[in-house]
Image (cartoon, rainbow, N blue to C red):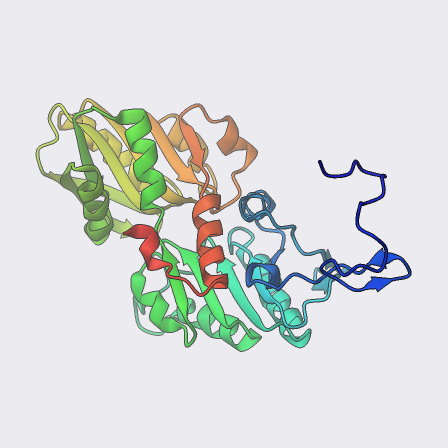
Length: 348
């Protein structure tokens, strides 16, 4: 039997046993470092809950750092651990207040680069400005490209994000970019809560058909499309339903819910066309302004979002809004990047 703690070992002093004896005490033999040992997680202030959940999944501690504001609201970040030669992942959603959180991310990446980190990966569960991915009128910016340039110039070596509003934003970066999909998390919840229902996946607009079709194929459901006309930003008018939704449980699928007007109008239109009930699954719950109140008073039986954006107290207390975590999805992707393994195989 092994000796009890505090008891002397049976091995004689000076006897070689895996390490040299120094002063009667065996020197610990250093274990070979793995890639996981060289991985560090750093978080700014946008989504502390998700960052802690990712750290728990990976069984690592968050790197000690301080994020402060000067009197004039300038951002200051101090990293309080040695990161020289380390593979560092900075977790920061660029959600409200978007500009503050973007500056935190850029400054953190710059600090890590100047501290000789071996590689810096910007982990951005929600990539803000993604809806500005093209010129929509004369003399307008492509702000998503500008943000990509800023992150690259700050010193990031890689980007990891989730459900970009437009897939082509990956091409805005001149560094490797992994765009994860929340579909496996959403699929599991659908099977756990709505399995056996007469399901039909619905895209709230023509632009989201690819995303909706992908989920429909995963759960073996039919597909319908809401044909809408948007008169101005933040307002939409449902025009027509493409597909027969009579007697079906409809699942509205989208990447971002902001004001909630599109989803609420679409839900009412589906019920008016014979749907029995309407649920919605959206990756990024921006839910700005009076969106939460609008959703709670709408025809939606449930709105399910992920924690890519830290949910507010209003979201947590809303009766028909639920939050799914993407921490295991993000954590597994981080682990695979650190080990130089395939990320795309997560979705095979």
